Image (cartoon, rainbow, N blue to C red; front, side, top):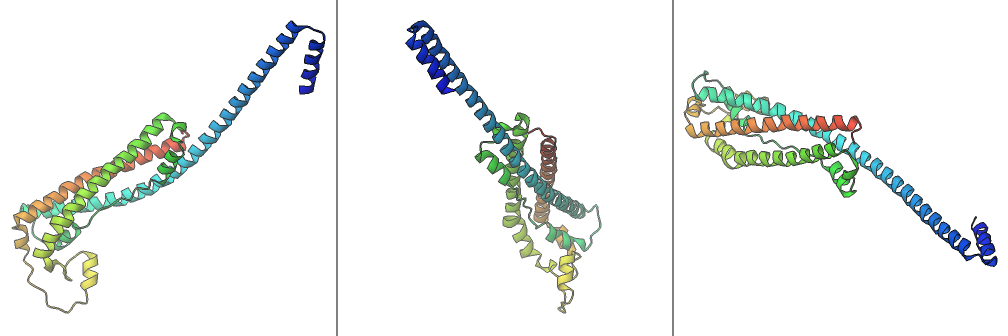
Length: 252
């Protein structure tokens, strides 16, 4: 093809027809420019197609991460609901609205346990590092980023709650109510561990527990933190499910 154009150009030059030669030269330049533009367009299209395909792979990873997050959040939500139930029952005895029972020992221990959700951000990290965020639907971008910002807020809330347990509630209970670690504690872990303990039990004064106003305030604080965490876990599950739905319905 190139030789063909060269022959035409040579013939025009030999015929001493500069105007025709100029027209031909301009046409050749235009064809060259058009060819370059078409090549660039095809290259850009292929590159965009590849970027979209990569972004969709990263979205699949995010979907798997979110499914793991949901399992964690559902387990933690169940635990917080149990904590809230125990705290309400305990506070009912403080307020003398419920009769004293040995479950107080279980409540004291169970309210010590901390909650931690390990959010998996591997999919988000690869998506951001590959600059793939711009190749997915804008509304989905917003949902994903909002979810991980919310996860940061959840982590901060968990840290606040766990800090209160470690620095105030747990040390106070272990110092003042150490006798809850015995075989009469109805919590299955304690009952199983101490079932073969032959030692004589110390005097268990449950009335002194509900007379402890400082402890009541701490239990109330544990209840408050638990309510907030429960709301966080519920919303985390909701947000994660919405993103999974959008990914599965090819909004990316």
